[in-house]
Length: 71
Image (cartoon, rainbow, N blue to C red):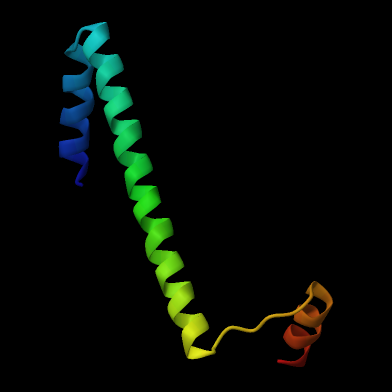
């Protein structure tokens, strides 16, 4: 989104009655939650695919540190 669109959105928001502002904020929050939920879902699908491919390493934190130090 470019700055002029965002500025216009903010200016328009300022003119709304309080009830409409509250509704808009709740709507935006819900949409943001959906975007985050979709992102988490996509990441979980990617992780599941990596597990199936066998490219995931498992172990303790100590083993992880050892593995990282050996790289």
